[in-house]
Amino acid sequence: MADQRSASVLSVDNISLAFGGLTVFHDVSFEVKPGELVALIGPNGAGKTSVLNCVGGIYQPLQGSVRFGAALLNGLRPSRIAALGVARTFQHAELFAHMSVVDNLLIGRHLGIRSSFLGEALFSRRTRDEEAAQRRAVEEVIEFVELERYRHEPVGNLSFGLQKVIGFARALAMNPSLMLLDEPSAGLNREEKEDLARFILRVKHEKGPAMLWVEHDMQMVADLADRIVVLNYGELLTQGDPAVVLADPRVIEAYLGTPA
Image (cartoon, rainbow, N blue to C red):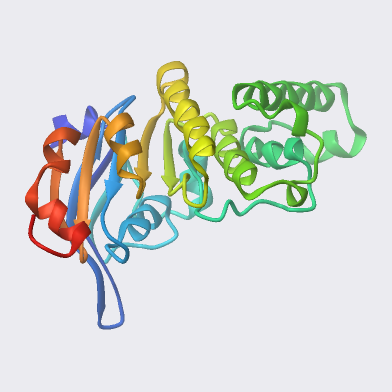
């Protein structure tokens, strides 16, 4: 197992989660390797977002371990996990509606800012240089996801589809080694989904972070994922190559509710 962990960005080993007497998921294991896009799928209520929450530190598993490279994430706060290089998107974007696109992305750069309280108070040369560097990094991300014309718009004035892209861009602005994508295509129309798919592929090939991706659009999953992990009623149903997993009668039955 040590050799597997050293070769993986993320190792999830036999984790379980319950609230009171309700089991959310039990004995779930999988890994995400460098540069890999792994889709985590399953019907509603399967426990997918809860798995992301355990990786990101929002929830703590009752048993098992979550490792990011060599670092054990169990017991760490979300802010500490983010500082290690794990970025997260949310189903409802969770942006600051009154702030501009640029300012929302600058928040994604916050953990990388190197300045002192005194330097901020005096707006020293070093502080000015640091701010300029962070703004350049944000502008690169804005250009990457084609948001140039919206950069100074308050996020609350923009469409839901654009807000989902901005949430994706904010995670990307953190320059992460691992991105946790929680249903980034939910609520998007077909054109918006095609744009998102294009951005995800560009990130994969040009930026190189590993990605753990919760998704319900099976066409996107079939087109983009390197591997698929399937949960059903809190249990790990199967995992592997997309063509094999999506043709598995157990997976078809889990989604359709009837045998294939």
